[in-house]
Amino acid sequence: MNENLLILCVGLPRSGKSTWARQQNLPIVNPDSIRLALHGQRFQSLAEPFVWAIATVMVRALFLAGHERIVVDATHTTKKRREFWKDKNWRCVFKVIDTSKEICLKRAEGDAEIIPVIERMAAQFEPLTEDEGSLYAP
Image (tube, rainbow, N blue to C red; front, side, top):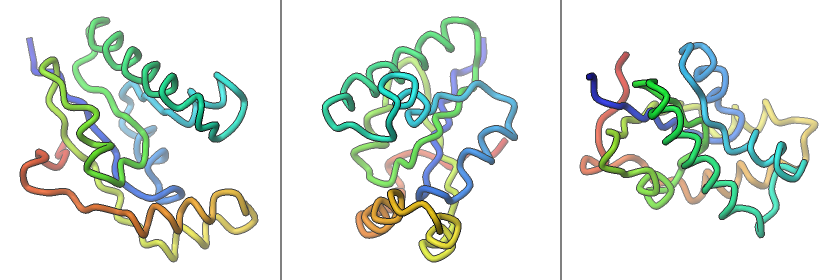
C-alpha cells in the first residue's frame, strides 16, 4: 500500500488554488464548499468548528475509501492552520500558489466582501518553515 498523501494548498483567496486543485483529478476537500452547503454563507464564525470537523471527516473517509492522494483546497496562510492537518495516518505536503496580493485583489474586483479577507490574510501570511514538510511535486 502506498503512503497516504494530503496535499494542502497554500495561498491567498483568488490566487488560483481551486483552479490548480481541479486540474489534479484528485479528490478535493474544500471548506468554502462545506460552508455553502452547511449554512449558505461564505463565513459564519459560530459554524467554523463544525466546518473543520466535517473537512477532517471527509479527508479520513476519502483515505478509508482507498484514495491515496487528497487535496485540501483552503488558504492555509498560517502555520497553525497547516499544523491542524498533521496526523499519523497521512503525510502532509504543500502546494504553494504564490500569487501576489495585488493580483488577488485585482481578481477580486467587484467582490467587496472578499477584499478585506485578502488584505488580512496577506498581512498574517506565514511562509512555510523547514520543519513543516515538503512541497508537493507530482
